[in-house]
Length: 468
Image (cartoon, rainbow, N blue to C red; front, side, top):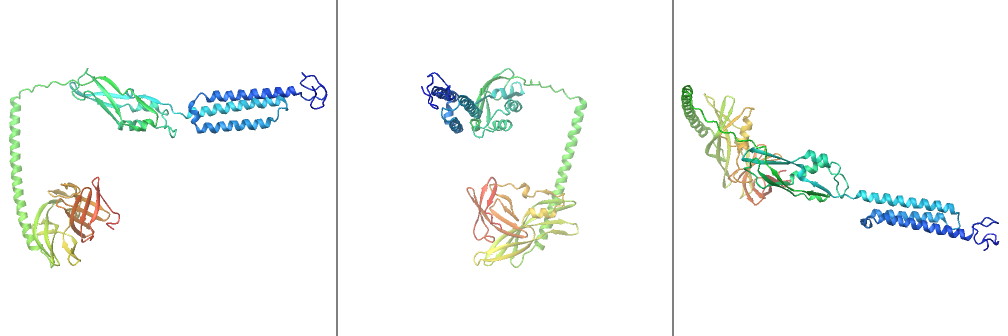
C-alpha cells in the first residue's frame, strides 16, 4: 500500500511509514476499534448501574444526571477529534471518560437510594408499662407507654417521607399516647394469677407519612402484684372507763347543741328586730321623685365588714316615662349603729326610653345597679358574705344567663330574662332571648335595633363595634 503522506510504497502490515513516520491506515483502524470498544464498555457500565432500581425511571433527579453524563461524553468525543490523532492520547481520554461516567452514575444512584425512606416496623408491646393496681380480687390494670425507651430506641431513625426531615420521637410518642386506647378482656375485679388479653387500638393517620408500621398490637398478660385484702380486726368491747368517757362526751355534745340552738334563736330574733327596724327606715326615708315611686323592698342577705353588719335590700320602683310606666330595681345597704341607721349608697343613672315619643329620660337613684357594685364599694379586703347572690355564686338556670364583661361594659343576664348593661354610673335595661346558638338583646335605650351575639363555649361573640 501507499503512505497517505509521502505517497511511497510501504508494507501492508506496517503501522508507521519508514520514510516519513506517518501512521498507516491500519493504525487508524485500531484506534477507531479501541475507541468503539471503550464506549461500548461505558454504556454497559451505565446500564448495569441503572438496572438495580426500577424506580429510577420515574426519578426526575436521575434523568438530569443521565443527560449530564451524555453531555460530558459528547464533549470528550469532540476533544478526541477524528481517529487520526495519537493513539495513546485517545486511550487516556477514553479511560478518563469511563471513570467519570462510572463515578457520576454511582453517586447519582447512591443519592437516590439515600433519599428513600424505608418502612419501619415498631413492636408496640415492647414499649408498654403494665402494672396491676388495687386489691387481690378487686384489681385493675394501669397501662402506659414506656416513653423513655421509645425515644432512646428511635431517636434519629424516623423521617418524614415528604420533607425527608427527622421526626422528634418525643413528640411522636406524646401524639401516639393521645391517640391510643387500650382494651382489656376483663377490666375490673382482677385477681393475682388471672390471664387477660390486652389490645392496642391506634387512630394515628400520620404514621403513613413517617412510613411506620405498628406490629404486635395484642398480647396476653398475667396479673400479679395486687395487694391482699386485710381482714377486719374485730372491735374490742369498751371498758367501763371508755363507757363513762363516751357518756360524758354525749352530754357535752347535747349541751353544745342546746347552746347553739339558743344562740341561733337569739340571733334570729335580733335579726328579725333589725329587719323590722330597717323596713320602717326604708318606708320613711327611701322615697321616690317626680318620675319614680318605691313599690316594695326585699331583704337579700348580709355583708360583714370588720365590726359592721350590712343588711342588703333590693328596692323595687316604678318610673313614669311619658305615658308609660316601667319597672326598675336597685340595691342599698343599711347598718345599725345603735344610735341610728347608716345608709350605704352611691349614685346611678338609669337611661329609659319612651317608646311612643322616642324620648330618652335619665333618671337618678341613690343606690347600686347590681349587688356586685355594692360589695365592691364595701370591700376592704376582709369582706364576708352571708346569703347574697352575686358573681361568684350565681347559678344559671339556662345558658347564657350570667355575668359578662365587654370592654368598659358589665352585662348581667338574670334567670328571668332581664338585662342590665352598665358602663360607669349609667345603666340600661331590657330583655334577652335565645334561639339555638344566637342571643338577642332588646335594649332600646341603648340600641334601637336588637343586638345579636353568637354563644360559643359559654362565651358571647358580639360584632366588634357594638359597644363602642
